[in-house]
Amino acid sequence: SSELVENYHLSVNTPASEELKLVLKNLTITPAEAIAPIQINGESQVTTYLEGKNKISINKSEKSSSPAGISVAKDAKLTIDSEPEQPGSIEVLNETTAIRNGAAIGGNGEQDAGIIHIKGGTVSATSASKGAAIGASVGKSVKEIRISGGVVTAKSSDGAGIGTGSASGNNRTGKIVIEGGTVNASSGKGAGIGSGVGYAPGNQAITAEIEIHGGMITAYSDLGACIGSGYD
Image (cartoon, rainbow, N blue to C red; front, side):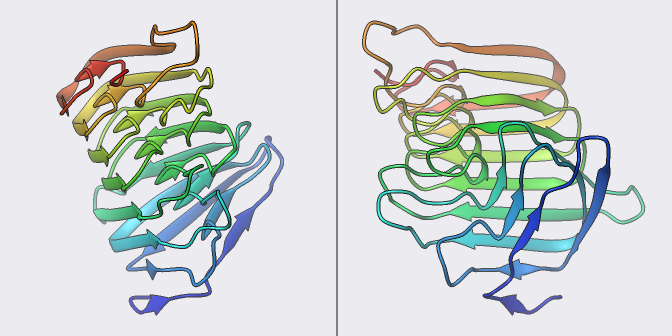
């Protein structure tokens, strides 16, 4: 639907042996409640195909925690793609300012994130606060972020553009693999690609594993590393 949707909520909970194919076509979602409008739960394996222009905006928090725009549970996998003959895009904005922010695409507040694979389409993700744009929420980990195609823009304030959110005194880990596509990742205090601002006491080193095998990459941070650790 090309109209604004306020009460849309899709919760996927399927066995790991089954793959669900989901098509988003000209959909605009701004939920009226503090809930991720698209949730990939449990061990679900979901491939989302983009058609037309899609947009998800999150601006509601619940107490000290906020959801992700598209949440991916720690044992789940989300693949984003676009058919060559039907190019599509999605913009995901997490505009909440809760203490335990979720990512734009990835982990809900206070929850680890699973596997996020972007294969195609145009994907824009923005976190206005401490969660990663693509990856983990505040103080939590992400299993893997893989980009093999498409055009990806990821921007966060204190979290990484692509990677983990701010530490909030916690150890957090993640694996980031870029092997294709066009990637533009940036942050204010976090790394463009890597970890968000801060570190766990006694552990200042980045704990994310970063592999770059290809693609056209632009990474920038105001105070953190372009690729690596966020500002201490």
